[in-house]
Amino acid sequence: MRILIAACFLAASAPMETAHAAPARPNRISVSYVAPKNPDHQPIYQRLKQVRFLERLQEFLSPVRLPRTLRVRTEGCDGDANAWYDDDAIVICYEYIDDIWKTVPAETTPTGVTPVDALVGPVFDTCLHEFGHAIFDMLKLPVFGREEDAADQVAAYLTLQLGKDEARRQIGGTAYAYMTEAKAATEPPKLQHFANEHGTPAQRFYNLLCIAYGADAKLFGDLVEKGYLPKERAEGCADEYRQVAFAFEKLVSRHIDRALAKKVLHQSWLPAPTTRVMRHPGAKQQP
Ligand SMILES: [Zn+2]
Image (cartoon, rainbow, N blue to C red; front, side, top):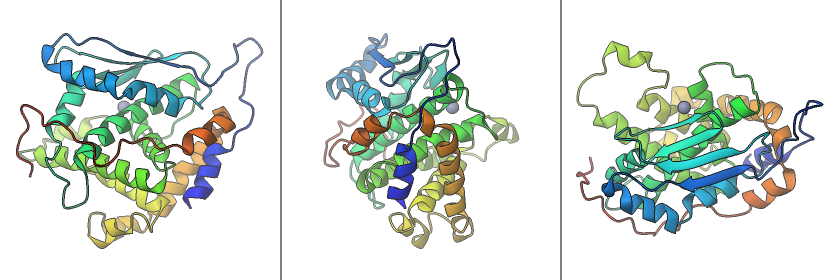
């Protein structure tokens, strides 16, 4: 199944161009690490640069032909733990990475999520989510449904094109972050909470598990067997995955440089699962 879908990811034809527009081309992402204003963010800033996080992201996304440069940067956001896309630029705040770092478990969890996956998984997923917003805008892609859900689907779809082992790890790390966020709520959500343009963390958790199971029922079969993904939802997940794969094939694949994508998909992208993660100075006990 993954190979079949990878073929869809790779399938590309000439990009649509208008007579006067500059031709879209691959390798159109620029990256930068803005020095943090808050000294507490210095270790994050140093570590990101050390592991060449943004350069790796830049290379992973390089096959997509863009009409203009997409700028991606990490920076301090004056206390706002956030990430966004706007006006040909993606911003990932150190505050957001710091929040994720706080939730990293000291040891591999009973469900098999390693500390490094609990850190890299959600941060990488957020970058891919923002990239989803970027391509909707820059490639003028139509979107049915909530754009936030569609951006989550782009992130999950790209993740599922990784090798089996890395796809599994990446989904596990991201799911861990959503579940941690869902469990962190100390009181029932207020009605207004559901007005948010994003799904709730619990919904995003189940959506992610569903698309993963839908892509590869063997690789993610234990999610259903162990009850993380209810059987009732699981029954429709192959269709849910196919819907996203079809949209990607119809709308995005013609904007992808086939040779570059093939090269990218043959590489490994995640740090070794045994990579040690320094404990956050304010790390809490994990549930
Ligand atoms: Zn978003």
